Length: 306
Image 1 (cartoon, rainbow, N blue to C red):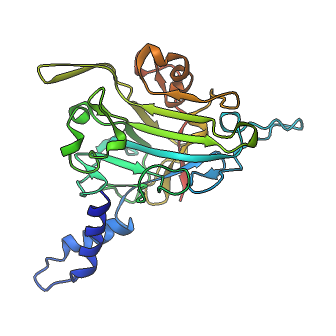
Image 2: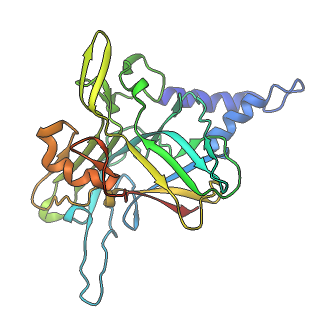
């Protein structure tokens, strides 16, 4: 993925943008992709009131309540160090003011998007982060500059692509750190951080979400728990992708966990993972016991101004 991204940048710099025969369209599209100036859906990742950044302490994620000033820190600790934050999104839809549902065209880009699936990557390999240096917070898609009622998308890889061989898959489905060998599937969501609190130094929170209970027969896979969160955002003021973006809050994702007394992990491995996973799955709107939508609305994604 790193080399492919570099080749795209080199191609943009080395080929004239405008030709007399009108063949500049591809080069312009590549330039727009590199600068995130094309239409699409922008994402932002935070931890409470702080940006989710690598390479140092993340602080400022406490909340004050009334005159008693009760401070609630992410997973019971403060500060933290981000280790990993990547997730796949797909199946984007917009609902306009006339209740028409528009399925977004999410094109293949050769790096971050393939077959309607986009990898959002908020870690850069610095400090305690363990992924790659490249990041991506943008879903390139055909959208109009207007206000819609609703934005919908799926947190995960569609079943039709979930069990392909990542080692020969197109980017971004070729990332080894997001593949699960034991289910021949993908980690839809990876969020990890460490406590940098002196009293609990090194205690970790590890949240990996993906389909579970998967079996294979004759090359056909089936999974008892889909574990794909269907996110629906309907802000009162509507959603305009040109002026607003989607925010993901890692603090809200791990509500229910406290790593001040020890590490917590969820690998979506069925009953053996139930005690930890069942506490955080509702934050994504999922019922861990079924792997489907639960009775609690998701709280981890929201709409904010750009």
